[in-house]
Picture 1: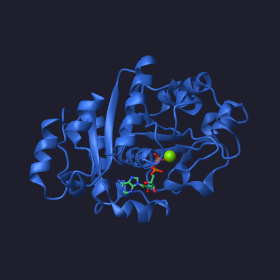
Picture 2: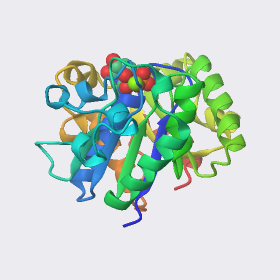
Picture 3: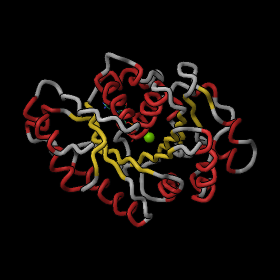
Length: 264
Ligand SMILES: Nc1ncnc2c1ncn2[C@@H]1O[C@H](COP(=O)(O)OP(=O)(O)O)[C@@H](O)[C@H]1O
Ligand SMILES: [Mg+2]
């Protein structure tokens, strides 16, 4: 099997990378793909909590890198979806315990076992970022529609280009149509103009995420969650399906303006 390794990054912290990684991995698994979500945020792991798998961790990424266990042993299988797995980060170490070379090796192994390897990155553009992108075939940049997040995303795109990553997609998270209308957030066409990369999806602000993610419940598996719907659509786009953007509330004008710029 030659699976796809997709790194989820942003520059700025707190924009929704971990939530995205967990939910898109779950949505891909629900579509029958074998998917693993990998936490590379060594020292600050939380993908395990968002996926509700924190009580089952025995070994972690650093144990694999340092040869204390085989990769297979560190993988945790989800109880809800039999083709969903997670590889946790170490909690008690720092980012220097992992190197780009060791990540490349792990990604090669994961690529041979999984249809999709989704790598969640730490915040920042230092060593942890370099580790996270080292083995990536494709990169998803998550931003919110705020100027500071977009500026960081722009910086990250430059770094990805120097690292010769060519497949770069954009996710705009926490979109609130009302705020865009009021001019409190940057508009999607403006964001795409600034960043110049392909839009993979828009995720609405969804209070269900705030309520459920501390409990390890994944909105991607919840048919009533607007963001869950967005994550499922993103998974289907990754599989090559042509899925239109979600209407953000009932704002047809806004949707039209967004749709004009939507390529896939
Ligand atoms: N679409 C969304 N709607 C509402 N809250 C969200 C959304 N996406 C993420 N969040 C919340 O934002 C916070 C940061 O998300 P997280 O995924 O941890 O970001 P990162 O990994 O980039 O630091 C979390 O509390 C999460 O529940
Ligand atoms: Mg995170």
